[in-house]
Amino acid sequence: MSADMMRAVVQDGFGGPEVLRVQQVPRPVPLPTEVLVRVRAAGINPVDWKTRGGTGMAGVVGEPPFTLGWDVSGVVEEVGFGVTTLKVGDEVYGMPWFPRVANAYAEYVTAPARQFARKPATLDHAHAAAVPLAALTAWQAVVDTAHVQTGRRVLVTAAAGGVGHFAVQFARHLGAHVIATASAARHPWLKELGADETIDYTTTRFEDATADVDVVIDLVGDAHDQTSTRSLKAMRPGGLLVAIPAGVSPELAQAAEAAGVRVTPFLVEPDGAALTTIADLIDAGHVTVEVEETFPLEQAGVAHSRGEAGRTRGKLVLTVTN
Image (cartoon, rainbow, N blue to C red):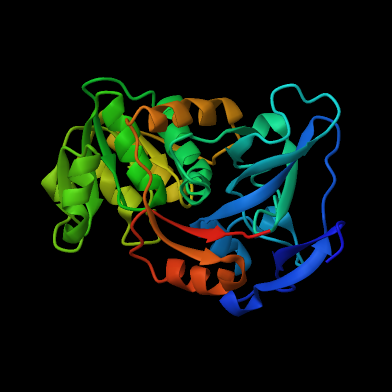
């Protein structure tokens, strides 16, 4: 392979996991203020397979062909003019360009230097790649949007997933009383992460098992058994529902107003500064990262099938050899 080419997972049309194929594509060149990162691992998120199928961020990224992926951990290979925060050889991680195409399922990516941060020193690249999108979603929801403080009661739905396991840890670190929904098998692990209460959603309606919640970080949405709307019943007046998967429908907004509860849609943004803070928390031992399974780049379709099957504990990650 020539030096100006690289391997990347490309899809030529929307569809199932079978549309993901490794191809030779031109290697990107960093523009001023950008860095070229040699990818060592790329995290997989639900938005990836949703976009692959034509939903998710498909309306933003446009028609195929394109390369999926936003989670990156790797090494700075080249810096563009004007970059002062990073240098060649730095190990970095980030969630560049989201929701625009970032091309993370590839051997190299380019993006603005300040959308990256130095990766946690205590993590290998596979675990670091599991962090950015999920952890930034949790951080921006818990810290920047809900302003969680000591003593607040915080309910996290789908708490055992990628975003959920970070949300539990961030809320607990801030001194909140954390209530987590997950299947019973995940409860001991979630208690280790800091959950004060756990509710088995397969046997119990969470709104019947808890009350007076100040903040709900809803990672399920109304498309699945009206989870967002049901959460209103568990909340105190004036509480805040952060509806992440599908936003706020007119019906949900109306129900929240009737219940005297605030509700807001949410979408994560690139944030290198927050990733630096998160890396410090990880290196200090306050936050742990769960990777259930890794796959080589060539098995991106297999990894998507695994993720879409549900019940993943933490994250799935693609590893890249180059």
